[in-house]
Image (cartoon, rainbow, N blue to C red; front, side, top):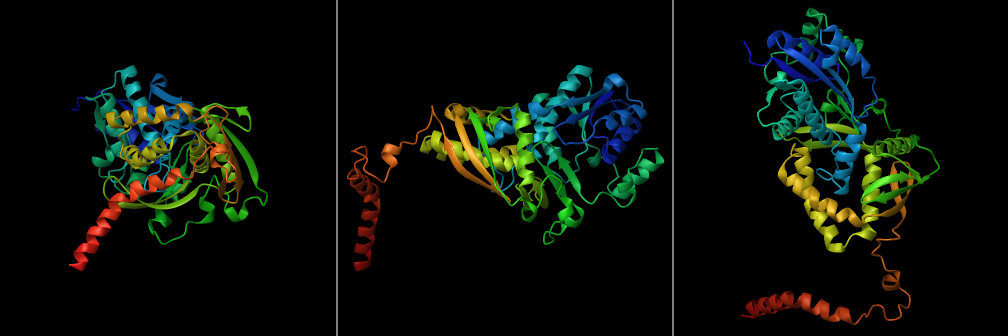
Length: 411
């Protein structure tokens, strides 16, 4: 008999988590609390409530939470303040959602007096690591149930058979051989994996993409967009103030319209395998380009270079599930300190898959001094003769080494 009496399940209402719900009831004979997060995935979430009720979950034990603003404000925006990119391309759309889900799972554990959490991440993926590292960081003694590491339902066919045996509704797409892609969606991105994409040499089908048109089908006319920044975060688009989640939703709309943000990537997973996936991140692609543009005139050169040095480490921490670790928190303090003077606006041109910076300014914090940078008469603001001594000092060690090498070759 298990000592787990109540478990909080991360529940989407799809085939996998519906099977997990029933499996928990049968295997652990425990009370199940369901948690469904609205992260802006654009799907109707109430069916998850109906399915949970059908399997005897008490209404007060069903949590469907709108986390869109917290997600963008407290997770996506802090990540973009660091200009975060994993392995040179991936904007971490799945990775950055997991620490918030882990946080809310633990909050619900504390609210309901549950003994454990349960997630539907497979034993092959990164998400099992992210969920569990986050949970342990926030509640060290929490018990974790990971069905994919315990059961023998290790194929789509076995899941469907289990669902049929236990009266779990199966969507037609699964009866017809399964959804063509394994997908994850939130306000930052949609990811696609599996089936056709398991061949890294196969081009993704055009009908797969949901948020973006192809660049070839994008409008022939460019669109200009102005983003206003306060302390490194976008607070308005084209002069209209918006909440954080509204900013990202609008940039997704604009980017998708102009074919921006598609990515086909083979990434190195935490568990050691290479995995091919396709991603749509239109708003994030715009945010990354614009943020670097506003920093280009407001950040000190060495501070900007230090951020660039630290960014790959910061990206790996997020990718590998260490959002709640002390080193990520320490890095965030430094990053956020650098953003105190990242204020102003960036003007962009969106055109057929491209984000083109066409202007940037900061009335209060710009370090760009046209009187020094000008190619015209600078009235003595910059003395070109100063460069000679600087160059000789920096060349000194190389000149000494070259002389020594010449002596050795002559001997």
